[in-house]
Length: 206
Ligand SMILES: [Zn+2]
Image 1 (tube, rainbow, N blue to C red):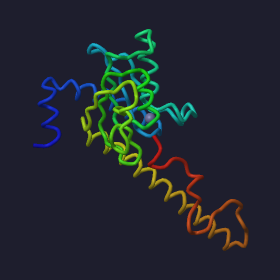
Image 2: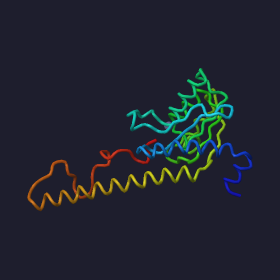
Image 3: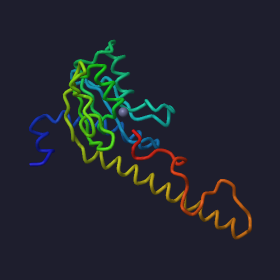
Image 4: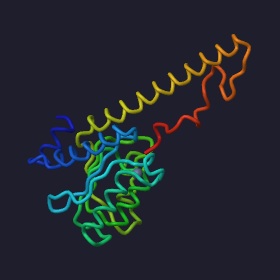
């Protein structure tokens, strides 16, 4: 029996699948504008009261993760910072910042899709959502539509790597052209490629 079967048994109406689908729709919106594709929704009494996608690049704000934006919306909708009867659905395991926010607003339950073995704070690396010394713990359900959530991220980072490689190659070709004509083009790195830190985000982001 696979993970998907277990979830179906726990959740016969597949509400988790339904709301994760809404989070995935948000993740696709992020993908469409070139953001790391992560989406989140907050659900209270069967109703979505917050929905957002990662907007770090758009807002030029490293804290603009999907979860943070969705939680702010949900708190506005409830009229309270406490989200004690809410569930957050997110396509990727929350990072430490978002896990901290989820504990602060006392979110009852967190459902995520893809595991993050590099930076996940819901058990992937550390479990801040159920940290023994903190005053609130969230219930966790993982792996809901996990393969879809993960494959969207893999696809995004695969494309990003291809773009970086093409950029490096085009710079190398231009550098060779300059050499051939005896000119020197400023700012062109050597054939070993461009400095990685100048080329945007890496898989570790978001
Ligand atoms: Zn985060």
